[in-house]
Length: 168
Image (cartoon, rainbow, N blue to C red; front, side, top):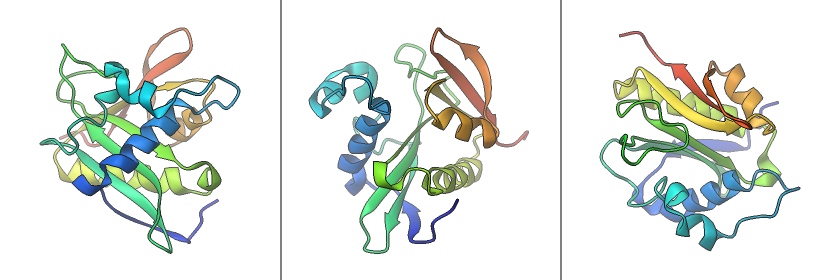
């Protein structure tokens, strides 16, 4: 179901705090688990490097905003190196996707719209693939699979997935 009461715009350096909020939301996707604080998420190098220094050269992103201009979701791509990989690292030339939507807006088409937009941005920037890591119990797993991501590696609870953007 899509909700037309939001629009999309490109992410800028002014959006760093909201991207951090969405990183925390993504980490805390399961309300049945103890929730990590913002300080814990941003204090852990393995998660903090998804937003540190935003935007770096090569970073891409988009925000969904409600009719009042308030951010309600974000998606962004970032390249990582083999010596500082993300959870879904595949290769240094394959950007890793992060996505978060504020709880009241989940299930209303925001995530799908953000995925469509970041795919467009990635293709326009010359990327042929993008990757991510997602826990299989997270309902976002089905969103990613439905948007063309395929599993390339499986761990005990999560999968690394890739989407082919173009075959240049």
